[in-house]
Length: 358
Ligand code: TTP
Ligand code: MG
Image (tube, rainbow, N blue to C red; front, top):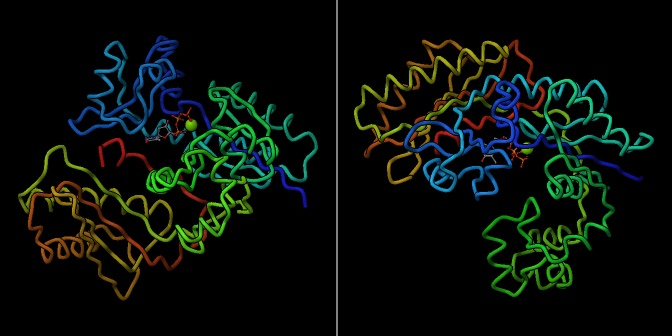
């Protein structure tokens, strides 16, 4: 069966939403980042990227690289609203859609005529309706669609067969491929396998010797742009959490408990809104030396009651008694049950943590 998959990804998403609201920023270097000392760049316009600014870079470094840039504090509510508008539109035009993050997702076009024209039409409508530009890639599987959408940003539209993808990215580093991270890339490089062409030409047995059965075979398939992953159109939501990184590490138990209370309130409000109640309550603590601890308790009945969650979470925190100053504190509710839906549309991940420097 012939598969045709598209990957759609909005260009410089958070920054583009800011430009919509404030057109005087158009054409300028704009960096979206928090204000705290540990803030990192969430994204930047392509004008700022020319100076080397990129996502996840410390904001201080970005300002040094591009001092003339306008910095804007992130407004996640606005980004969620813009994202929802875009993905509602996508779902109104296509049946099989996997939203993979706040600004990207996959569309199955296998049963449609003129798939490239369909995606062109979608991108035009997204632009007309929201002012946002998007890039898309089209290919016989998710891997090729994703790599193709990244290859010609911004406002790119690239359709590639597997053979074309192999040829076009032959000299690229293996890190180009989602699923191959920096550690694997480094191991490959030290074995002389620094391009996709070299990786592709390596006998799978050698990769299996180096990386084991599963990962070796996986690398062999990836390098050949083979991928049979299905679109995940729904996902079971397993847990919900809320966490924060402090601007400076916190020692004092009362301050930690107060922060925990705020996190619990935010989380319970979200659970209530989604009709979810959970039996497991957990806390997560990251210390100033970056060690992490989690502690959890399971109740006999599911809850989203802030008073109860707060009592349980506070007890867990007191029992753990952080031995060092705390960098990050989080709370999680899991084991959902009860009246709420257990199957929920895949939620967009939040980037609040990243922006705060986690
Ligand atoms: P991306 O799609 O990775 O980036 P982008 O849309 O800003 O730029 P482009 O796609 O044109 O390369 O991520 C989407 C949004 O997610 C981005 O606008 C901001 C947020 N984000 C972070 O907050 N931190 C990160 O490290 C990354 C990669 C993204
Ligand atoms: Mg994007």
